[in-house]
Amino acid sequence: AFDKLLPKDTQPAPGPQFLCQVTNISECLPVQDQTRFTLTLWNPTIHPVLQYYRVPVTKSYTVRDPTGQPILAE
Image 1 (cartoon, rainbow, N blue to C red):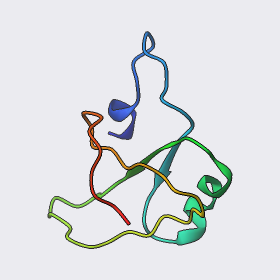
Image 2 (cartoon, helix red, strand yellow; image 1 turned 90 degrees about the horizontal axis):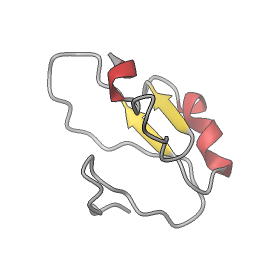
Image 3 (cartoon, rainbow, N blue to C red; image 1 turned 45 degrees about the vertical axis):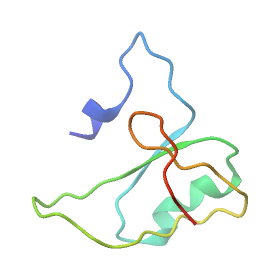
Image 4 (cartoon, rainbow, N blue to C red; image 1 turned 180 degrees about the horizontal axis):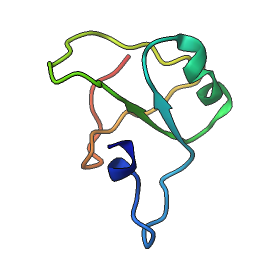
């Protein structure tokens, strides 16, 4: 299912892409040194998940929704 979220062969990737399974923060550590990246948080259950996720970055970033619009993030 994750492959369906990736760009098609004719579309350029918006930057390095990371899948964070939210089971261990060490799985997300590669994003720390990136200046631009796409991070997909994957919920493998059929139930909605309402919780906060921490992404280990030290710089200021703009978080965007799937349409490219900025969304509120701290």
